Length: 320
Image 1 (cartoon, rainbow, N blue to C red):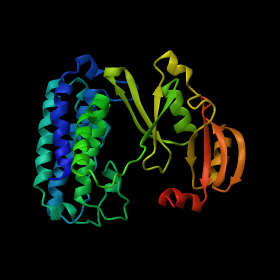
Image 2 (tube, rainbow, N blue to C red):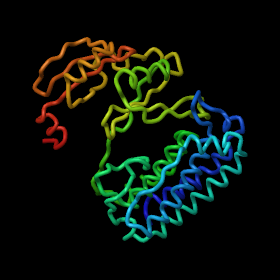
Image 3 (tube, one colour):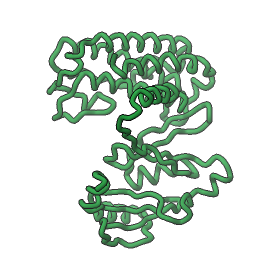
């Protein structure tokens, strides 16, 4: 069985009772202007299941992966998910996704893994594939589960990760001597206010907003940004919730450079940041490892803006 099929079933079974435990007030509350309430997020997941169900079935009898898209915002509004009974939404969400898991599982491997040169996954998939690259139905199915989990986290927060942690422990236990591949995915940056931090990192530095969702159980937002083009490194903007945390805003490393922002064009970004009012506290300098300057974020944390040399990149990549 495909791993993502097991993952989908696990997410549904483990999180159905957690969803049902949410109050009417919590499921109807919107975290901010223009944001969906948990009912609307779950409604969107039902729409996603509905659209992808017919896509997955049609893909088994055609040579391409070209499908119609849909206006997600309009669908949520037209179906009035904001006022739908929560228990009915959860039941429909559960049934539809368990059926999708059966559809995925029943799809022959040769069909799932066959490369399709013609597709529009660059437009309709969650994790897109370049238009000029072949794509597979297997990727599209796994992508659906990734999108599913992403929005489930918007409703429930980190609690949905429980199943993933168990799965990882089992994998590691069954391959105790296998190679370990890890990456540093998130670094927390303590901020005073979510929106002012977003204005700087997204508006000024040009970072990409990865996620901004409300966690009702903890009355906080889960806000993640990422440098443009970055595949793994992401920054969690964590609002200070205690006096002690507030005391560390802008001073997480006691005055040392905190984060290192790599770029493929130092002078492009340096001039752009200067024009946008970013404060540089150390002028550009050529070092053996690359061209570097130090700037401050809106709270005073220091960052290296660095264009590394090819030899430095090779050293980091190969470890030699």
